[in-house]
Every structure is written in structure tokens, then in C-alpha cells.
Length: 258
Image (cartoon, helix red, strand yellow):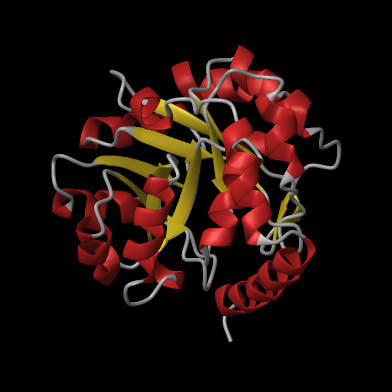
């Protein structure tokens, strides 16, 4: 199996355990107490290149990326240095994230928050909403058949914004057909972890103009950002290069303005 297969297999075990601990009906019952959502989609559609800065401690390919990891402090730095939205890794086994990071960050900053995880079931959408996420990531490669469309519709019904991600070109029609208006192109192949920035540029001409494109992974310099913006990319999602920086704020400033 590829690492992506392994992650999905383990995620299903996690979901089953979480459901036994907190039944879906209990998550449903709490929705009325959740604050209104922040406008993730609208924020990314504002003029200019928008940045989704990622709160990420580790990854399967890189191991621990940042030893002095304080998710709330990092989120505050991102906000004060001009990030538009935040992506919060919540997978614990492979990325050392926690669902609770979303709630803590929501209470500390005003930016819209994306739950970045391997979403397979509606239960995780309810978790995301209860944890104060404004948006969720859906990955086309791990949602075969009608699962992508079903989860997209379920997320929308719950009021969540949706960033639908693909890597493989043959997933593009499915992504567009599910109703996505925010489409993420992952420059990293999640099966091999090979990263290539040109992957976004290769797929961009095939995406309908009504959709806003987010380029993900492998973006390290202001020159990279300019290149993507000139090609028509609306936003970027950046994590590892910022997480590795000694001064996160300075690194985000350099990415934004050179």
C-alpha cells in the first residue's frame, strides 16, 4: 500500500472509535450552540493573491517539522503578518495534529479556519463544525464514486465552506462536477510525496473560470507566488516552508512581499 492508503485505513479506525466515544446524534445536538461561521470562500476571492497559512507540526515524509510548536502562538503570528485564512492539521497519528487546535485557534484569532484532514465521513464534518472550523478539505483521490459529491453536499448543508483538492488530472472532472468552486491543486503527490510546482500550472488551463484555484505545497519564495499569480491562481496554501523558518512572521512577510 502507498502511504495514502495507509493513512485512509487508519483514519477509518479513528472515525469508528470517535463515534463510539461521542455518538453522531450528540454532535448534531451541539450545532445550535456553535458561533456563526467566518467567510472562508469570500476571503479568498478578494482581489490579489490570498494566503492560507498552515499550522502543521509534522508530516509522514518530513517527520517533526517544528519542535517549538505552539499552535495558538503560530496562528497569532500568521494573523499579525497578513495571512488571510488558516489551515489547521488535525490528524494526530501521521501529522501530530489535534482537533482541539481548531477550537483554541478560533478563540484566539479572527481569521477563517480550514480543517485539514482526511475526511471520509459526515461524522468528521460534524466534528469540524463543533471544533469551530469554517471550512473543510475534501481530497478527491480518497473519495471514489459518489462519495466526493455526497460529502460536498453534506458539508454545504452544514454551512461549511469546502476546498476540494486533487492531484491527479483524471480527478478534475469529478471535482468540477461535484459543485466545487474552490479547487485546490496539490503539487505534492500524496502517494509518493514528490512535489512539483509546475503541476498547478499544467492543470490550471483546464479549470473553469467560475472556480477559484488554490495552489498547495512546494511554495517557498515570493518568486513562486508571483509566478502562480501571473498564471491566474487565486490563493496559495503554505505550511512547511513557514513552519521551518526560525522567524515565522518574517518568512510570511518575505513570501507576501519579497
